Amino acid sequence: MAVNFRSLLLKSRLSWQPPVIHRAKHVGLGRIRYGWDLIGWREPEILPSFEQRVGEQTHQDPEVNRFINIGFSSGKSRRELRQAEKEQAAILKDVRKDPALEKAARHHKLNIPLNDVRKQWESQGELSQISGAAMHYGIFRDLYGAAYFVPQFPLRVSFPSTADYETPVYRGNLISPSDALTAPTITFPSADDSLWTLLMTNLDGHLQDTDAEYVHWFIGNIPGGDVIKGETIVDYLQPIPLRGTGFHRYCFVLYHQSKRMDFSDFKPNSKSLRSRTFRTPEFYRGFQDELTPASMAFFLAEWDDSVTKCFHKTLGN
Image 1: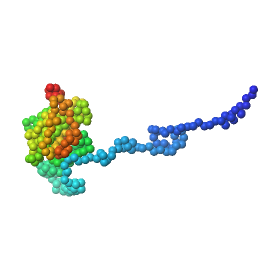
Image 2 (image 1 turned 45 degrees about the horizontal axis):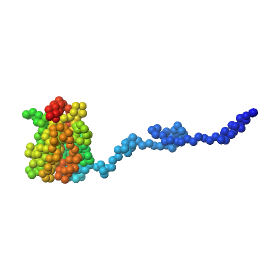
Image 3 (image 1 turned 45 degrees about the vertical axis):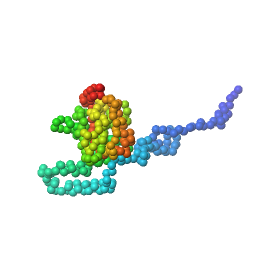
Image 4 (image 1 turned 30 degrees about the horizontal axis):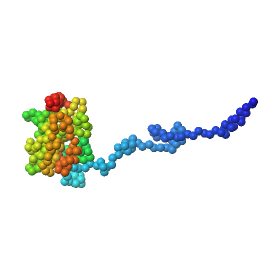
């Protein structure tokens, strides 16, 4: 029987239908050059940039996450502060143009009254630098979340190292634990009839909970700025940054009390570190109507041999 291949070929052409191609959206191919891809023509598509994708993932509502001042008001508006900065910049500009000062400095005959300079800096620039440094080191973020305060006066903290020398605490300076074995000296301006609370916490050293702190010193109901006469809630504990954990932030915060308060619930029931667990947000939330942060100071510390001795002799008993 003869086969008509011509008729079979014609039938196959008539019955043939092109296969259905389901076009899937390409992910990760980047921009399409000239609108062509492996399948054929497609409309050009502009993918979001890296900054746009990160912005979408990390977007925060400015009304919800805006910083709130929980301290005392500075007493000056933003316009007044900007005006003071402009006046200071104008004074510096005029001083730089003074040929007499330039000549005296070149001949090493320019005498600068450092005490007057320090007093002026303490009254104008020190407090803003304290707040700026605390913001830079994340102190406010880890203490209060989306809140901050402007220090009203400098908090002077110094550790007694030797008979003739003390180790001061500034704004994030490095102090070894061996130089902070005993409680520091605290001084600040205060009215005689005022009451204060002083807290020293470690923001980076908790061994079990990253959101918690260790309280190293807690003194409440301090009368008139005399820390020695205050009520000791938690005894002083030297800095104990563990080996290999880098620098730890130790922060002193001074609160103004509106009345005499009872802090007996915060007294530790043992000498273990667990009993020193502290959470500043919860503490402030419970006493926000009676306590107002007024000043602060903080330093950094890294492990040394005194930390090991403290764990064996002080915390090991």
